[in-house]
Length: 304
Image (tube, rainbow, N blue to C red):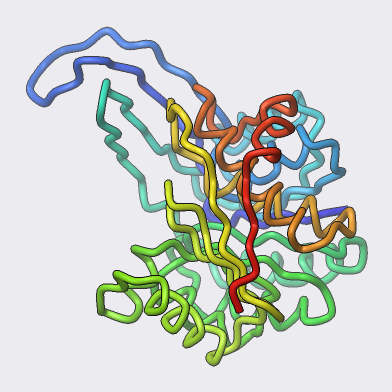
């Protein structure tokens, strides 16, 4: 099975307001889903037909709501109960805008973290692919992701985080990291305006410990750096809701790994899942027929 780790989950609340602006009152359509990047990965893997176990921290009535929602989706969950309430995250989707309000998350105690680490070690015995996603809650140091990667050194650990958490975790040698161009530029503190600069920039992260890198370039596709270097070109699509597309891309990559596909096919699945999510109203949602059509149009070229 595939294990997904969400240490800072949330209830994602989405409001659709076509003419959204500040200082006004709106009556909006609202949608609630179990949120946090790792839970988006879980939903997409479930839709792809993979058995998945979701873990992390859940607390309070919000945590109970998430657990029940996952059960209704037939997603296995194995969370550690926290004394603190699980957070809410709000996204307001306008005609041509996306506004997000993200609560930081409740503080996790040292005892709760130790309990989770012990639990995580046991879950590693049953899962070969580990997807660790998102931000860290209060009370957990940046070294936590490094530790989770080190504990999973004999597994394939996919890490999707950013900033200081990502830099520290590189020492744990994750199998794959998935920064986007903006995140890479922020880490290196320099613009990367050519393909050559992007590749050189990504290689610095591999020098720091990442085994493989999938660098997202938005509408310009992606660059993959592994044993070889690939450029992935994607077709133009009508974007409806981009929230969760990166998580869907992680799920597509994990799906390809789980099914022992060639790297070119893994990269196509990764891109197709991200694009399918962006073409949907829902977050962490894909359409299998849409993915099938998109994969015919995605071009993967070895460039180095």
